[in-house]
Each structure stands twice: as C-alpha cells, then as structure tokens.
Amino acid sequence: MFVIQVLGLQYLRKSLIIKDSTIHVIVKGPLGPNGCKGYLRVPEDLQAIADIDVSHVAWEAAEISSQQNLNKPFTIGNNKMYGRAKNCQLQPKESYDITVIVTENNENSLIDPIMLKITVLNDEISPRPRHEAWLIPVILILIMAAVLLYLYRR
Image (tube, rainbow, N blue to C red):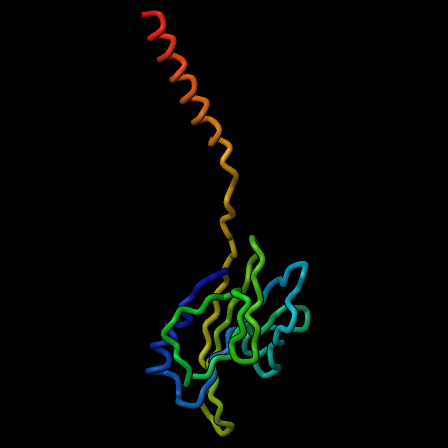
C-alpha cells in the first residue's frame, strides 16, 4: 500500500476546487495474478488526460466528490470503495503510475482539469524470519553451564 496526501486534498478543496468538482485517482500498473474484481475502468475522457492507451492496465482507484471530507490521507491499494471506484490492492515490488485529476462537473466549464502524476515503486517490507533468535537461549545455557562448572570446582 502507498499512502499519499493526494495533492494536499485539503488545500485543493479550499483554493483550487470549484464547489461542484470530482477528484479522480487513477492507477496504471499490474493488477497481479488474482486481478481485482469489480474495479472501475478509467473513463474515456480521462484516458487521454492520464496518458493511458488500450495496452495499459489501469483503473480508477477513487472518485471523490469535492463535497466530501478530504482531511484524511488517501491510501492507494487498500481495497476499499471510494464512490463507484474500487481501490485495488497493489502488488509488491511493482511500479505504478498514479494520476490525480480534478474535473469540474459543470458541462459548460472552460477550466482545464487540474492534474498531478507520480510514479511509485510498491516496495513493501516483508517480515523476514529471525534466524538468530535461537542463538540467545544457546548462549544463556552455555553461560549458566560455565558458571555451574566454576562453582562446582570451588
């Protein structure tokens, strides 16, 4: 999972976002062997903006209205629903392009969409087995044996 404060959503909401707008979080990258059931394909009008063509695997991870509370960080890949979009889980050790697009819902809008694009490597740290854990009891037993041997000889 990758946690981002999407464009400082709080700042966007207060200064740049018009009342009636939508924030789209688009992820481009591999879905993994099991895929993601129920993911939302990127709408055609956003594909050109996000530089997505037919050969790319991409999905809309979130569709958030500007009216919603945007004070919390947004976690990419947490498998939750945001609007109609499912935020599919990311695969470890894979690279993803994340695009955040703010569009105005007014059809007569003359304002271009606001966009941010970043590339991330999902490098989850997996807990490695502790091979040295057995060493501590062995050392303690050896020390206790040495102390007992010393006391026995006295």
